[in-house]
Structures are given as structure tokens and as C-alpha cells.
Amino acid sequence: MAKIRASCDACGDVELGTADVRVQICTGDRDATYAFRCPLCEVLVVKPAADRTIDLLVAAGVESATWSLPAELDEPRGSGEAISHDDLLDFHEFLADDDLLAASLDSLLGA
Ligand SMILES: [Zn+2]
Image (cartoon, rainbow, N blue to C red; front, side, top):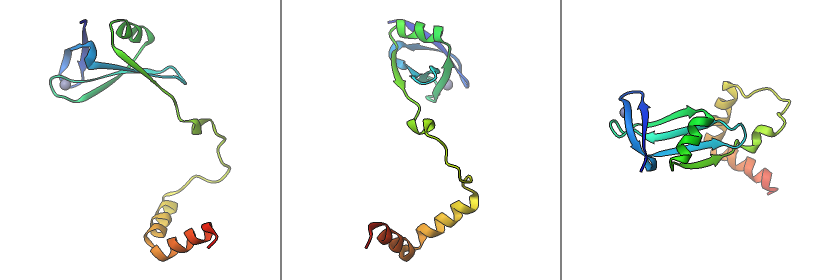
């Protein structure tokens, strides 16, 4: 099994096996990262990686996975104003008022 040398921000260089590292590639913008749990401090380390690094890791046997940006990012944005802190507080108070919440849900259901 190939040994992979990577760097933990806290511990410095560490040596890993291919099963200890995972590659993640975004299908939308092709950004890629590799991740591993540091064998010394056990912190999860995630680092951006260039295509060449990813190719070398995958060729060495590191498992790779792809992920996609959420489709909502492609949806047109609304024309309304951004939600403010006051809007969030109002919504919190609305959720805390059981009677008001029940009445609103009833109106949505046509009851
Ligand atoms: Zn560490």
C-alpha cells in the first residue's frame, strides 16, 4: 500500500495509508479537496488540492467521491429585500406563539 505524506496544521507532516485519505471533487466548478483524520491529534484535516495532486492520490488508490453544488444556486434570485435580523426575530416570535402558528397553518390548509 502506498504511503502518503500530508501535513496537519497542528502536528506537521504525517504519514498515511491510501485508506486514510479521501478525495472530494465538486462536479460544478471542479474544485477538489482531500481529507484525512490526523493520526496524531485525530483532528479532521481538509485541504484544497490541485488537479495534479488529485490525480496522484487517485492513482495511488485513494477513494474519490464527487459532489454537486445545490441546484438552488442556479435559480433566479427574488426581487425582494434581503432578510434582516429583525425579520429573524419576528419569525422566532411567530414560531413561539402556538395560537398564531396554528391559525396560520389552518389558513394554509384551508380549514
Ligand atoms: Zn494533527
